[in-house]
Length: 206
Image 1 (cartoon, rainbow, N blue to C red):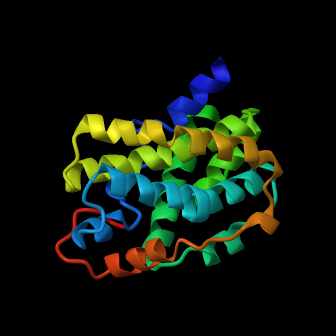
Image 2: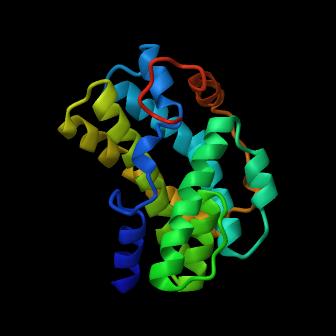
């Protein structure tokens, strides 16, 4: 039970990483009218969990959990300057907090790498870490859409619930995921992240 409580604390919106400031390119798609309701948002996030950055993050998280040095590759794999900045800022903020509160010897690095390494040092189970990381990713982007589309809070929570099975599946898969499983074909998300760098007006940093 204590492991689960630690993970829910680490991956809670209240944990001071500043995830609320980032939309991961979703703001671009909302501005274009491509994400205009809960159904479109759910489809977009489902693709990221299956084929895009969320799944890639779980691969990197799993490798970091096993103490493999994948920092350079994880940085190269970021498709835009803002996405790299997002992963760096979240990771550095997470690392600062777990160093101070849990006395964990984790370096400043990209967010999935720091979470994976911290979980291993704390002895937290990889499947649950990966599943909750994926769900936190979904919940943060749903929160962004609730503010921008706009979407009702109830609709937003329905999207999070609908994607729980995919988050759970990523958690189950995590112990077997290696760099051989690294891929991404969610190209529209990558392009949206690139275009966000010149989007005006905008609310989010990515």
